[in-house]
Image (tube, rainbow, N blue to C red):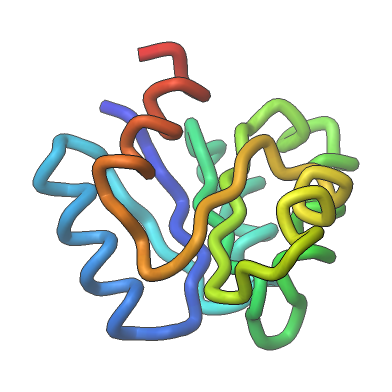
Length: 121
């Protein structure tokens, strides 16, 4: 089963997205802040990370940098999730180490397409 780490501080977003991903056959583990997300990625070695960019403790930009600089997590694909779809945000996410970028509110069909593409399924 494909394991996705969802790093999201908003409980409503976390609950809605995790339930919808589970319905589609993904196993989902969750972190509420960027530091815990980095720690959980190292502990659980997920197949993919959905990373909110606006997080407490350590934001998504910094978390992506940590994940991509560590040997144990650098190969894990990261999709940045952000409600702040400003010009340049996609480029900023890619420079931080993210492999793709999606905006909130999440369009699940589009997000699943990006997940499948990154995982080669």
